[in-house]
Image (cartoon, rainbow, N blue to C red; front, side, top):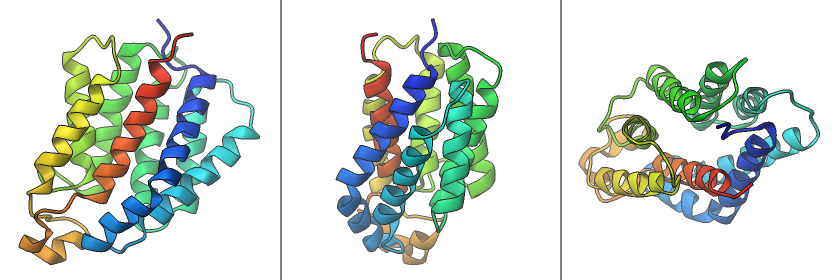
Amino acid sequence: MIILTVDKAKDWMKEIQKRMFDHKDQLTELDQAIGDGDHGINMARGFHEVVAKVNHTSYDSAADVLKSAAMTLMAKVGGASGPLYGTAFLKMSLAMQGKEVDQDVFKQAINDAVEGLQARGKADFGEKTMYDVWKQVANFLQEEDVQDWHGILEVCQATIEDTREMAATKGRASYLKERSKGHVDPGSMSSFYIFEALAEVLDLEE
């Protein structure tokens, strides 16, 4: 069964944009604690640009929607977030290219996104980055024949809580060393909103 059409891919981007706007202040506060303090602003601006792009473009496939989103994020979002999220969506689009996106294709796309994030961010699991959330979602999808996509949110939330007590070893947060413990990684939180938006779209009845 096809789970990601052009329309659903567009809807995913729109749902992400809503969440980034609604939670802009929260993401910024998280980033002020352990980063540059601009994550919420960057994510809200970036996905505003993505939605502006997809609303005025015709696409032949879901893969093309995600490629467009990737290129927009890379061009419009500063810091590490643009290249990292851009890489994730670009890898997903390449995995979907020329295929109808059923659950198996989507799972492979997430796997490819995770590999792209690891290569681009030089991150490993347990280093208190967004990679932790994406990796756990990929693991969950490999183990499950997903009926309710909201199940991935429990995985995200559990991972975020696990990483809260970790000391960061990557990015600006790593400068704080032990003092980064007790803080949620802003990239992990924005990743949660991306997957929350996905669940919202994929669980809607046709």
